[in-house]
Image (cartoon, rainbow, N blue to C red; front, side, top):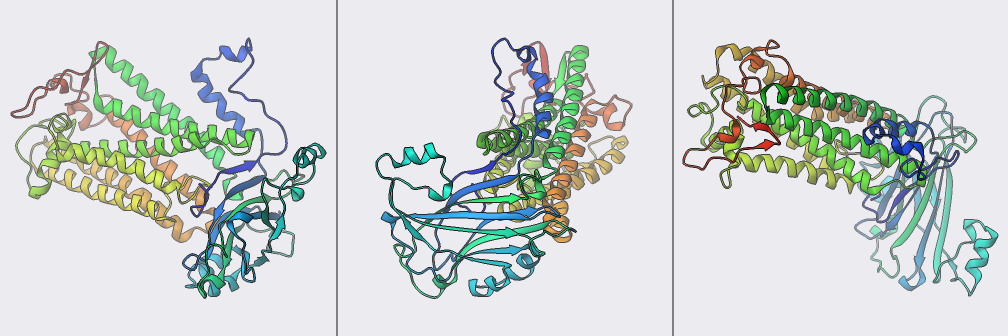
Amino acid sequence: PDHGRSLGKKRDISLGSTMHNILFVPSGDPWRQIPFFKWLLLCPIFLLLQPVWGKVSSGSALLTGEKTEHLLTKFAVSPGREGKFSMTLRIPASAGMYTDERDLRVHLFADRNWWKKALPAPTCRKKVPHADRALPVVFNLVSAWEDGEERQWKQRGAPTAGQKWNEDMWVARVESGLSLTGGHGNPRKTAYWYVTLDDCMLEEKKTSIEDAPEMKFEYTVLNGSVEEKGHFSADELDAAKLNFFHYLVSLALLLAAAFATWRTAGKRGSVHLSLLLTMVAIFCDASSLFMELLHDMAYRRNGYGNYFADCLASHFEAQSDGLVASVLLMVGCGWTLPNSDGGSLRNVPGALQSTVEGLRNPATAFQKKEHPAAALIMIIMAAHSALAQWGRTYDGEFDSYHSLEHFPGTVLMSFRCALGLAFLVGSHSLRSSGRVPPALNGFLIRFAVLGTTWFASLPLVSRMVSTFVPYRNMHLWLSVGSATVQICALAGLVWLFTADSGASAYHRLSSVQNTNSDLGSTIAPPGGKRMPELKFGKTKIRVD
């Protein structure tokens, strides 16, 4: 979906060099002999071969007395280039006509005016004076195709301006340059533009939907000219490189975790569930990046990308975050630590008692019906997925999962802070319970600090970026910050569950390394039935 809840599809125009479809090759081609895993490394490389220089989006906008403006897009123009915006609006004659166009405008705001002046303005009338451009919208009636006329028009290769439709249509066209210095672009910095469609008169008088019907639009935004081989929005220029680097790091972590799992299974005949969950989190992170790279690849090849791949990228990222949060909570409450089934915890309110105990013994929690700890883990996973999808309805131009620009992003950051508080409560109760060996006290303190840092890092990064970074650089720095946080978290979990026993007191005493502890598959809750044995082939999966 487009920014501002508009309807329709978003697509970008890719002009310049052609690129073969690398996923579907002729039979007998030697590329078919390359194993699939190698494609995970080779496919994203093609992202660096071909630039995209323009963006086209389509959708619908209905202006009313309650909603007198519609934010069409935001677009960054590179230093030294002059961008261009053009748009076609149309209304089917059967839906009515826009009877009063006197105040119907497309306004273009530079970022310096948008955030400080236009956005805080309480009404449309007070907002539009801060626009750098005001483009009047005038509709003209275009009659429908006559018999055979459309075929002749296509054969002649006539320009878009001569296009007609299968019914009579009211059509308006507007266009403008995007520059801050008299048509030559600002040579010193990126210019960020916001484009709105508005009619301030609607907030002053009541207008029926027949007199101000819904408008379908299609706009094109260019960052430079074809000769300049300009890219799409300037704040996206380094996104593919960042995603590719992050993807390679995730693959390296996945290989390290897989090797450790294979080595552990070979030596002991068992693997702890914590290591498998870490592998799944890394796999989700790598899959998210791979899907985003495939989306970008399709974006450059066919002009509009792959919505399914882009959607999967968001949800894989959300599940990776949810898994990391769940594992940190369980370990912080005592999972994988010795004496995990002792007496009750101290210094914990009664309402949290069973939740903390369940996080210490997830195998027990998931055997009981409606156990609060099991419910909490499922809520964490579902909430991350729901917030990722909700965020996509606010901004379809780039990944805004961790953004504070919209309400779902704010909810996600607040949820992450709440989980961090729960992590602090669980880790503090564990240290004060007297149920763990004194040798682990130093490790538990460091783990509590690092875990709390992870829970607070993304809200902190998002807040700092929103506060101190100019908007034209906000997306890049938010992407760098979130990627750094996730890489550090996943690398820390790989170290936590795969390092040798001499690495720390935790590695000497935890059930991940201690082969003498009971298998989680044989743990039974008080008064409950024994959990069925978990196996993967001949390898036992331990959840103690």
